[in-house]
Image (tube, rainbow, N blue to C red; front, side, top):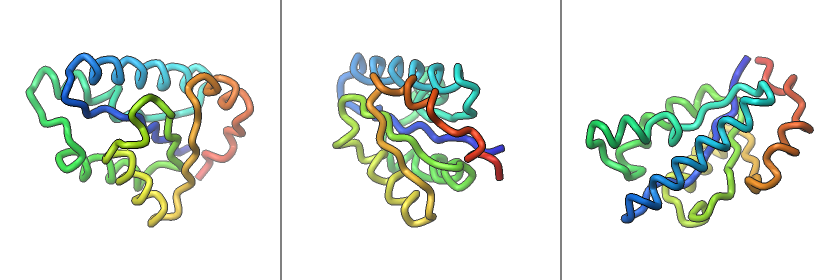
Amino acid sequence: MSFIYLATPHNHEDPQIRDLRFKKAQLAAATVFSYQIPCYSPIAHWHPIAIDHDLPHGWSYWQQQDEALLKSCHSMWVILIEGWETSKGIKGEVLFCRAHSKPVEYIDPMDLAKYCRNYNKSKLVI
């Protein structure tokens, strides 16, 4: 089985906005996994580690890590949380996916549970 890479915006000059985006990324990951769809959210995973260990927030720092995981994913779901349209990280991840023939889906967070219910998990079989 493979997994879905969940892309959400993160970086912002205001730490409260970064924290809010982290919480929304957690909710998205919990929603997807509650439907037993294997997924990975770099924001849900790395935000607390970055905070606790004073790691940088920008795409240039995280690009190599994210691309290593994107190579292994089945597809990427961009969760349309406020800030996604201007996110350098999401733009870079989308370009990477397109260059590597990985499907990219754009999903409104309000429709995520419905999308998961209708998602055919057999797509994840390698």
